Amino acid sequence: MELREFFTEDAINLDLQGSSKDEILKELIGLLGLDEKAQGILFKMLKRRENLGSTGIGKGIAIPHCRSLVVNRLRVAFGRRNEGVDFKAIDDSPVQYFFLIVAPPLEVSNQYLPVLGKIAGFVKEADVPGRLSEVQTPREFLALLEEKAA
Amino acid sequence: MHPHLEVLLEIQDLKTQRRELEQAGADREVQESVFGLGVDEAVRQIELKIDEMVDSLPPPVRSRYTRMSAKHPRTVVPVIRGTCYGCFVQVPTALASDADRNEEIRSCQSCGRFLYLID
View (cartoon, rainbow over the protein chains, first blue to last red):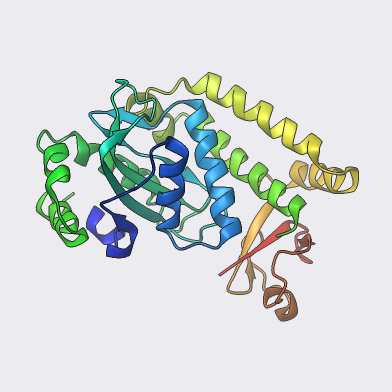
């Protein structure tokens, strides 16, 4: 299983506009193309997860995630805001790179945790945050995933 | 979407989250090691939220929910391609293709679980 398989160009935004955690979460959810009600439910679930403890894992990376009935398969999205946003991350640093993961409660192939683990491993590679700041297009982001064989 | 169905969905999502955290397995480990989450406290907070949301349901829906959740941990399930994902029995076509999807609270005629129609 490789991360590249799960990302599509239309679920990548390299120029997020939000300046708060809520705005960023809404923009990321918007990349999944769900209906309005489903987006609202997902937002509440992600917020609840954030309220338990931030998904900002440090070094400018956050991985908001949850399971929800509003999706029928694993969905992922990536967003970047180079200026950084206060996400109450573990290291208190602003977050620039956001990986959203949403999965249904039951999955046939049970990919949610492996994908979460893979993303956590990918972003921990020393050069990845720097490379993420340099990608110019969704295609380049996908190429980075491929290069790292994440 | 019916407002009470929305609450039921959220309750079910929270129960999924609680179940995964409670299990001494991969999710608990990831939450602790990657995100530094205090899992026991998180579970406590989720339980409080679930109780609060169940209490917010009107009595007829609440009692039906309570009865069903005692029987089925997954009390609210999706209908995908006409199949109830609780008991995996086909639901009537009229229900699965209803134009007013999710505007009413509906149950599976086979297992009784609350249904959420999804594409």
